[in-house]
Length: 242
Image (cartoon, rainbow, N blue to C red):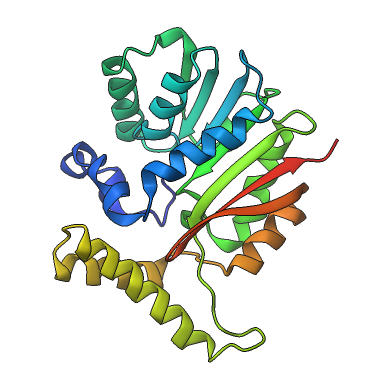
C-alpha cells in the first residue's frame, strides 16, 4: 500500500516489476508470515467467506490466500495503480478466477462497506502517518462483521524506554541495523541496505509494539495478540468486538 510518504518503489515501473523479490529479502520469514496470516483468518472466516485486503498491491498475499482457500472472495484496495495492475497479472497467472477478486484504487475508505468476514493489512501500516493510524484502522473495523479477525504485520521497533531498557535511540538503532543486516544476508548490496535503513528511520511512522497494540485497541479491536516477530517486524491478530 502506498501513502504520500511511501517509497517510489511502488510507482516506478522498473521497481514495481521487481516487487515480488522485495518482501522475501526484507522480511524475515515472509512466506511463513503469509501462511500464518491465512491460518489465523481461517479460524473464523467460513469456507465461502469474504476477505478485505488493505494494501493489496503486488498480489502476493492475495495469491497465497486465494490458492489455499478456493471458496474465499476478496476485495483488495491500494493507492498505487501500477501495484494493482501487478496484482491482477499475478492472480491471472496463478489461475485465480477474476470473479473472486475485486481491486480498488485508493485508500481503505474506497473499499466496499462489506461486511467482511476478515481482513489483512500486511506490510502497510508503517507507511501511514501516526495521526492517521487510528482512523485507518477504524475504517477497517467498520467494514468487518462482529467477531471478525484482522491480521496486521509491519515494522514495529522497541525503543528501550520501558523497564530494563538501555535507552530508546540505541535500542531502536540496533533493531534497524539488524533489519539492514538481514537484507544484506539476503543478497541486497550493503549500500542499498544502509540507505533503506536510513530512509525507514527518517521517514516512516514506526511505532513501538506497545504503541501498535494500543492503537489497535483505540480503534475498537479486542483480543489483540502478537503472533509474529522477525527482527524489526511484528504481527498481530485482533478481533472486532461482538
